[in-house]
Length: 78
Image (tube, rainbow, N blue to C red; front, side, top):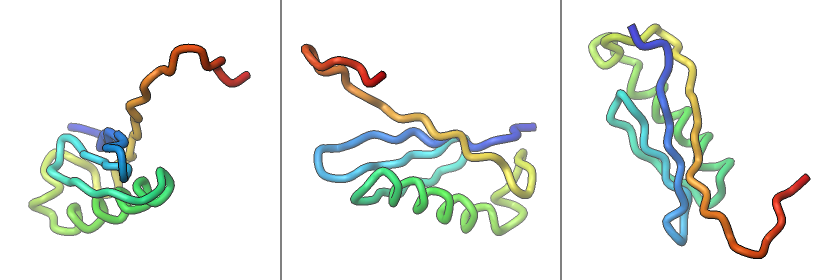
């Protein structure tokens, strides 16, 4: 049984987009914070029905991963 939903976050040039797996949820937001909040809400709504929750616990964890592009010449934060 899966114990979590994985959320992949990427910036499409204008907005932050979130695609979830193993469930079919997609959302977006103007900021990273808004996109993650929208993903939490969308996942909760998707899992409201028992049939949509197949293989997941009632309240699974949401693991968030973000795509980042390194920029040459910029120092990493310390």
